[in-house]
Length: 481
Image (cartoon, rainbow, N blue to C red; front, side, top):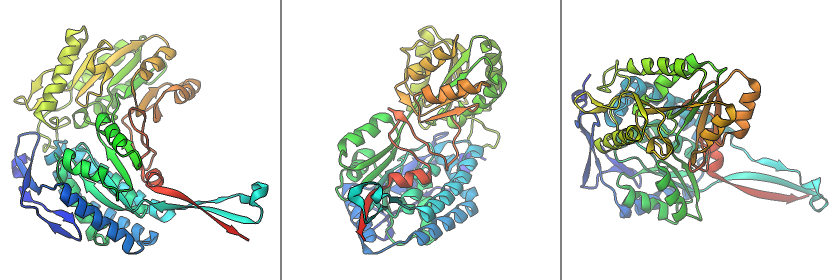
């Protein structure tokens, strides 16, 4: 199927209780061939103000109890499953994500909604042992969890459906109203998810949806005093700038990484090579936890490298709407050119190009690329590539591998292949990452697990159970007997 078969459609924003247009439009074009996918209305700061006021009014007007929130989220999961084909094609078209990968994202969205419903049903506080201290004798203390009221949600392009679900599902489960700004490159998937939630019975105005630029719409959400919390997924510079501008708000950040994969001499290097084939290049490497820095013990490095490179060269690159495609385009030509320039820089600095590095499919895509031994000053080692590139380095000792992995200023997830339980425990204790995955690549994620980073990779955890905690405040209530 070619992108030309996608029917271009005008979409609407949801503000103050209804679907609306603004009179100005932004085009959404397929990254692969530029085909018009649809148009969305342009919002501005004034519309954000109206949206925030409407969300606050909805929150303040009355209760939306836990069982009702769970019912809506469960129904939304059912509807997403029924609409899987349409959502899959929308993701593939507007994000350039291979259709088989887009289908997996749509299926994950079902799980995210289901786990959000569970989080809504099980949201609870705790009993405080007041009489554990003499001053608390005769008192009962409980901690309840209270929603912030209005949550501002800003989502990225690379998972245009499921990462929106990770914003909306937990926020609703926690009892918050939401003002959502989806990524400008991929807003249609988000619009369709909001439509689905309202079709599932979400009360009027509990989600406001405003499309527009980050500089205007995003900033207006961040700076509005009635927004009590921000949840943002995107680049580290933008995320930390939001944190600085909203110092008095709860700001939840899920940012980038340079995900390392450590393969020790006793590890299953064959499985590691096979998994890395997929997880270094899925969605053209445009994932915060895409395998980027592969650290392999010198004793198995040659065998691993041969198998990995052979695997990579078997990947099919091209039209994301083709079921056979493994690797599609980057989200824009500018990103394609940036990533290629980083590869060229590394090779010029002494790295060995093992495969890829060139533009293919009439220059629409960058071929899956593997380089070896890029110097530490290169972008490919120190920065998040966010493209279809993996780098290989060798190490002599496990200590050296840990140190190399920890050199990064990022710390989202790391993978370690070893059969030694002691080394696995050591990796868990010493690797400075939000998640350490033993005998798995760092790209693994299931939607109920706590997911998030340390250092420049973020300050929070996603996964509905954990995100709900981040989107509620603790309040102590005591009773005198």
